[in-house]
Amino acid sequence: MARRALSLHARQLLAASLGLIAFLGLTGVALDQAFRETSIDNLHERLQNHAYAYLGEFEFTRNNELIEPPRGQAPDSRFLQPGSGLYAVARGKTFRWNSPSVLGRSLPEPELLKPGEQRFETVPLNFVDDKGITHHVYRFSYGLAWEQGETGQAGTVTRFTIAIYEDTAQLDRQVGIFRRALWGYLGMAAVLLLLVQMLVLRWSLQPLRFLERELSRVRRGVSDRLSGTHPPELQQITDSINGLIESEYTHLDQSRNTLSDLAHSLKTPLAVLRSRLDSGADHDQLRAEVAAQVQRMTEMVSYQLSRAARSGHALFSAPIAIEPRAEEIVASLEKVYISKGVFCEFDVDPGASFYGELGDLQELLGNLLENAFKWSVQRVLLTVKVDPAAANRRPGVLMAVEDDGPGVPLENVEHLLQRGVRGDERVHGHGIGLAIVQDIVRAYRGDLKVERSTELGGARFAVHFPPIL
Image (cartoon, rainbow, N blue to C red; front, side, top):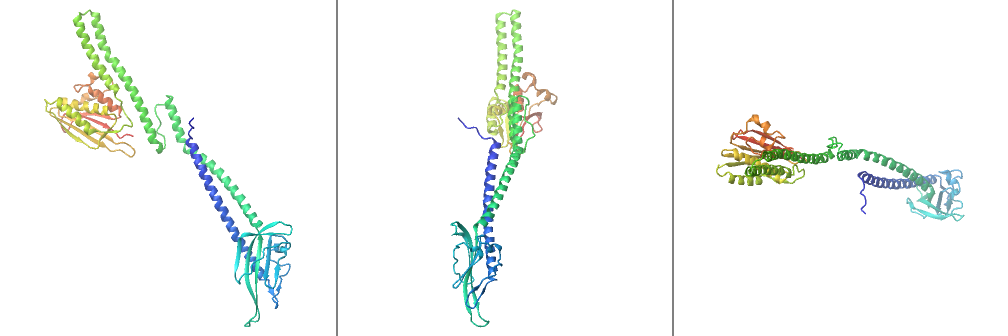
């Protein structure tokens, strides 16, 4: 069973959530690491200051014995409290000194460093107290040499190392407080940002939901097209859908019109046949009349079927080059009208194309050129130009067929192109094919103009198909 695809809203929300969690997670890790490193640096500086403070209190006897600082004085009160977590020791070759806080603790012994050498262990050291509990401490060590003697005379040099220890619990407690605050705030920020993201996504996808509702209205027959109030990103889609809807309506109207025209056209021949039957005509007359009316009905049916068989406006058809199709049609017509010696001139843009069905192009050019050949004296001119299109649209095309014949009276043009007039009533000497031309032009949302040719003096039939999707 195929799984149901995730909606656009779910996809966007999932992607945004994963990205947000990854970003906040990496941010939290980076901030946590930065805070820990800063805390270690602060600890280093603090232990160093404690060591310097103690060195200011140290004195030595002539026998290189350390005179301990006063009992009640210390850089920090924790040095005076046994097991406080802050310890100080001094180690020389002839003496050992511990701060009162070292009582009951067996701290790791510092190494005797060279004078001026400093060392800070960022990796905690372990020791066990008198109760058997393991502790972890950071240590800062500083080596120096104490020289005794009068100025200008060589004296005794006492080398020793002072070390300051601090329990890791202090730093871990600070880092723990920061971590709880950090991840708590980041968690709240994630929830807040996800809510904002949901609102933003809902607002951003609102046009799609609106488009879905409009499509539902079209399916239910409540509306006949989509509105034009859509964002630019969806405008081309809505235009394409509207084009398809209009094409379907055009096909439906065309089928209805074809059936209506066919029924209307057959009324007269059928009425004539019934009249002849009722009149009691003899066999020969009746046979001749039946043959004539059958031939007439056959022509009507063939014409109406040719109109109904055309596909009409094909929205996504591939382009068809116009020039080679026109050359084929002209070559055939020149054979038909060879006795007139008609010469057809071409002014065709090589890049001109027709976006539609090949049959429609052949019907269009065939009928226009045949009318021109039929009513011309000697010259016919075919002009095809490209109508440049804007971005994301297919170019339009302008086709004009002119002849040097008698032309079409301007007062008859409106009647000639009137919709709904039967074919044999609207041709006025230019053949039944003009009705097909008019239907093709209308199906492709173009326009047809009939005027006098300024170059040849006869009729000029101009068809314009505008740029489309």
